[in-house]
Image (cartoon, rainbow, N blue to C red; front, top):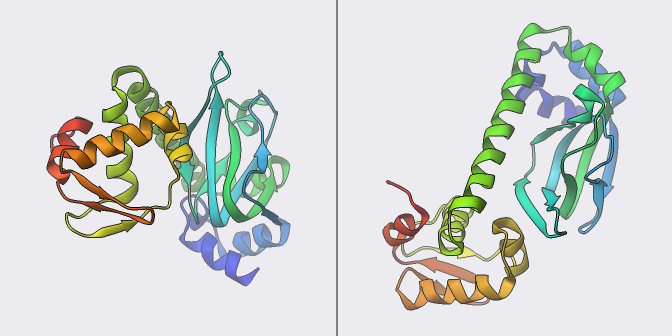
Length: 225
């Protein structure tokens, strides 16, 4: 619990609370371990909780009306999830999926809201976090609607790997994970990656990418950098 208290002092929202609040939160937190492929909540569930991701990787995934699954974005260690149902008691708009084995701390809304409400700055930070998430989802949806597969894949590579020309990057996303992230099939992802390789933008092996022309990738992605 001491480790959790230290993390809370460095996290948005929680950093605005007092040491006594941190101690109370640590006492109330339910530590859970989830394994890759499990779901913490499903789209359509009422899930009025807050989650702190201590280790691992989670993803928000959505089912479209025709049943296709899209991973909207991923969460990493130290990220915090504020369940939508916490604020309106309505169903969750997406599923929270475990992308790799994860350690999380969970609070119910009834337990955490009275503590957060002690600090106006903490409440304001919750609003900032929710708005940032909404803007992020908007960019993802915009990308699905207006960018072809090559552009969406280039944007994913640039954002996820933060490439430097000539330096290798371990392949920690599978073809299926890339496809889920950009709303397409693994076959089309593979074909597009090899197109990038043929055009001299990347080198591909089973274990890593080497980015050889970031500028061309940025042009495909629609970046102005």
